Length: 253
Image (cartoon, rainbow, N blue to C red; front, side, top):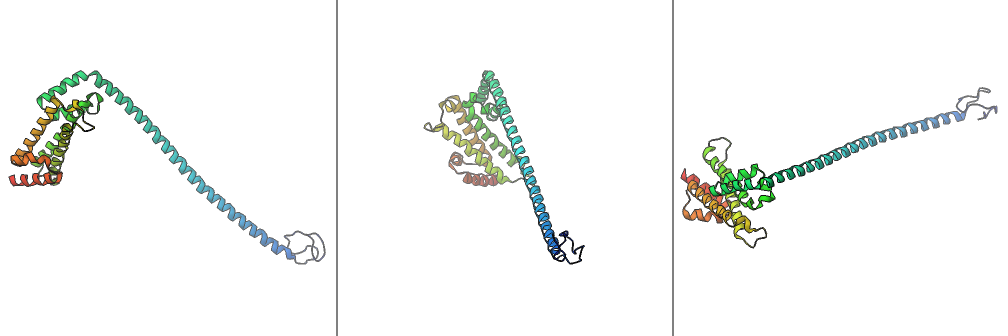
């Protein structure tokens, strides 16, 4: 720029002209403008850096989540395939030894060993095998029978334990007695969609009817029920049967 006093060329940032000594009016404004631009640059740079950090943090978190999701998917697929292979091997083994399993199940049926049949099917994976689906009502009923007897056992032998609640035993007995009743309802409802003659007719149907009588006798003896009460318990709701069992058991003690 030129000095307004002597006309010589001088640096814009000099506060005075080096030739005539006149104050440079433009210098102060120039310095202020440069400082303003510097401050704006530094603020903008700081914002960019901060946004960059946030973006990087978000990107890293997103990448980690994506990797975890991918790993979970890989593990799930691998487990699913492993289960399918394992189930296929188990099914082939069951089919191969089907005659042996059938013979053992027939022995349990003949002996009216309800719990024995249930555990035999459970241990050998027969409860979920299509090859033995006709035995499933016996398997399911055996599970109800087992839980009912376990709850009855608790009433006699765990009553003195500090955390034992007999109310739970009454409820469990009532629940499993009536769950077993639902199996019989399916056996008697020949129009039901789920009804299959091979599941209930012949020895299997007789087996379930004998189990019903054994359950009824077991409840009648241990809860001091009259014949009428024992026969009518099958038609009660779970809540009413629970109350009846508690009242009769307490009265007999």
